[in-house]
Length: 85
Image 1 (tube, rainbow, N blue to C red):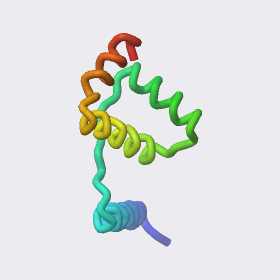
Image 2: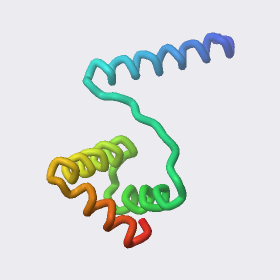
Image 3: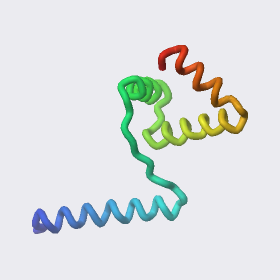
Image 4: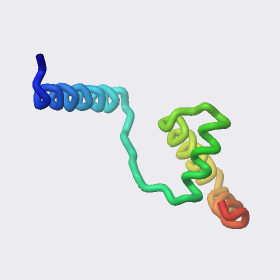
C-alpha cells in the first residue's frame, strides 16, 4: 500500500504533468485576487453561462482586449464605474 508521502508525491507529479501539458498546448495559468464586486459578478456569470473558471477568464480577457483594440476601453471602464460594477 502507498504511504502518505508516496501519495503526495504521486499527486504532485500528476499536477506537474497536467500543467506541462497545458503549457505545451499554449495555455498560460493566470491567478489573482478578486474583490467582492468581482466575485459577485463572477458567480452570476458562472451561474447564467455555465462556463468554467477557465472559460470565464478567457472570455473576460478577450472582451477587454477587443474593447482596447476598438478604442472602447475608456467607454467600458466608464460604464463599469457608472453602474458601480
